[in-house]
Length: 74
Image (cartoon, rainbow, N blue to C red; front, top):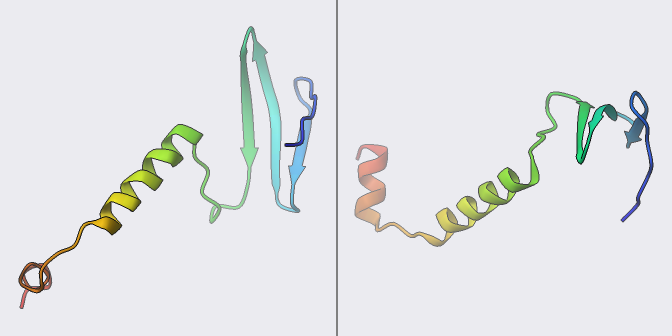
């Protein structure tokens, strides 16, 4: 892991098109602004993990051919 120190108003560039800016520091919280192309999804880590777990659960579930036929209306 790369660890960098930044002050309020300073930025970090990721790749060529993502900029992370420290907006505010209050106690043990840091407010970060993210400037990235719209096609790049940005999630808080806990939400990203929930999405991954839900996707894995959905992939484990199997449906019978009859259930699939009902879904597509045949």
